[in-house]
Length: 175
Image (cartoon, rainbow, N blue to C red; front, side, top):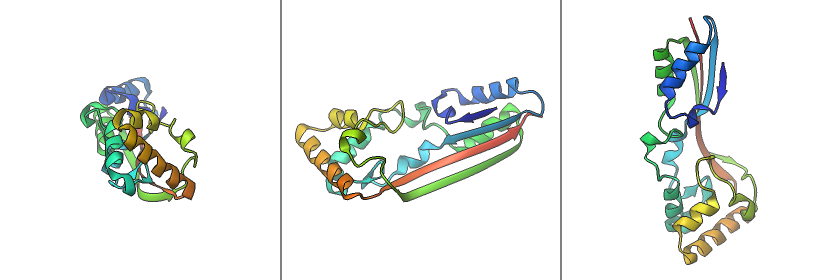
């Protein structure tokens, strides 16, 4: 059984592992890949999704809060880390557990687009607001104007984004 970026949408992850175990026959293999989104919660204050927003730090902090409206322990995208994956798999009965974990901090990467009109329609995940929605919901008209002008300038300059992400790849066998 293979899953990729599935558990981040599952509220009852321990139950999911028990179900994985139940449906696999003896000798069946489990392969789970998921981002560890909790890791990126410590994102640098002068950054918003990898873009340098030092010059507009106050409005950027307001926008950032739009993405943290659900307490971490209740958000299925944030309420686990790699140790939980190991624990749940072991508790479910899987053996020969192997975990590959990769963390990347402030790694330069090209932004997906240099066009704000395109980027503003993007959400960091399917359950989160788009950048446009977060900006509209958190900033005054004057703050929006200042923030958007800055982001447009950063995008036009071609400054790479700085990605902070962690990923876990777990494998196990049903005895």
